[in-house]
Length: 273
Image (cartoon, rainbow, N blue to C red; front, side, top):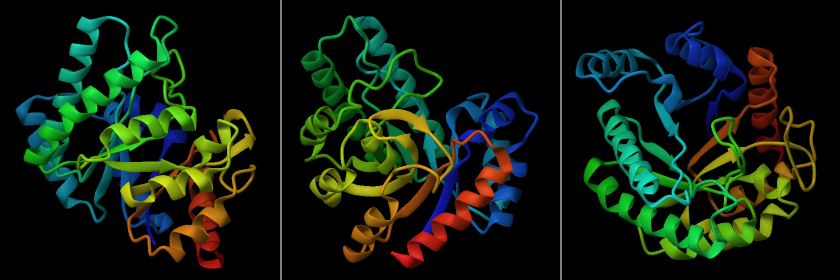
């Protein structure tokens, strides 16, 4: 298993600069991770000098940056804002390409009360397809996620419900866009993740390991302390020869301790599955 981690518990420190990216790399290496994930919020400029220094720093680190997460809102009710969101995301793609990051997460957008579900899904599909055309030329692998709700948004993802997620997947199936399958988010939506995983597995490039306090409630908890059937999901992935990256989305709010325990638990559970 190739294991990375998105350190949600450390987002405040990594965003305000009290913890640096080299600090995060050092912690990840000490935990025995094979790679690291970052958020676009950790990067503070598109200026050439900054990006050159950042590329040099990343190349000097022992671990690769596997995935960058960002938050395009392609379901926004305002047409001009949707255009801006597309341009913002294209800029994110260029940045990841320059920094040598392999995967960039793409989302549908927020469940804005003013946006009709059918319109939102259509807009998401249209924009993700547009992004796919550019990603190939930049050498970036986009991965669409069954997403929940980040702190950066006011509303939950328009495609939080698996039925909506699958509608978008159908709309982008013939593109190079892969899937970052978040096991816990399906449980948070009140459904069993395995039937959904089976439907989309041919497109799955990466996995997010998350845990939830209860079925049908988006409440992330420490990995292994919730109700998400991680072992069953791991067993399915191993039986089908999954060789992509498994990323722990550590969102327990317990900082370094939570990350260390999550890494140890995930490796042990994978071996047992």
